[in-house]
Amino acid sequence: MDNIVFLIKSHAPHLDYTKQLVETTAKHNKDNIPVYLSIPKSQENTFKNSIDTSLCNIIFDEDIIEENINQNWFTQQLVKMKFSETGLCKNYLWIDGDSYFIKDFHVSDFMFDEETPYTTIHENKDLFQWMATKGNLLDNILNSYVSDRDKVRNLFGRTGKYYDWTCPNLWSVKVFEHMREHYLEPNNLSFEQLLSYVPGELIWYGEYLLATQAIRLMPCESWFKPFHFLEQMEDYKNEGHTEETIAKNFLGIVMPSKETNRLRF
Figure: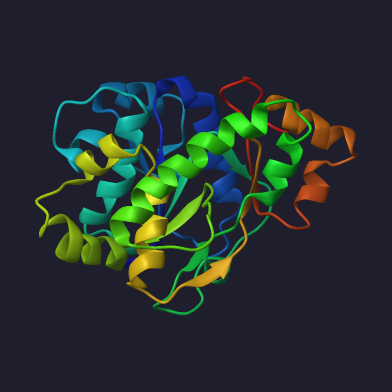
């Protein structure tokens, strides 16, 4: 069992993004952290014809969640959560396919020590500040942002500040084991039911960790610069930023794939 691995969850519409992610991961992966690419079984040939499979270990969504599935946000989030049950690792950094590395990285970027992963946690102030200049966008986003977190916080009895967790995100299998033993099983619940109640895998993991301290929480800023909107990215470019300036503080970039097919910043 590896101490840390990478998990890329993808499907055919993100094939070009995923090819880029796999290749940039291999280029910058100085400690040879194992990489797993989870895809639908039906798309195996599509991926193997386009991606150098020597750079990653291909696994199938159906082997993780053990049921017939449709490719949607629910499947994506469920695969990420149930990867904790595969026995492949103690910690895993999951990365969405529309991301890519721009800088060399080591295990020490992700692990505080042999037992303790870093946890990205922040209040989203940079994004909210940008949204504040875009009409009603901030108010529209904040309503669901607060509502979803309140639903989960109330279940776990947590109060205090509202936090966010960005992609890529590093999860400890110990947290999910603790969740199953102390919350899911006593309440006869499943990951599927959690996501049906609040569709946010990051919220469930993050709020549970904050409420229970199931592992030592060592906070860090986001590893990647995330762009949620094409306009946000264009504004950033107009300020003079390039991949080189972004690499001063970040290991990679998350593209606004819902609004553009462009592969790189």
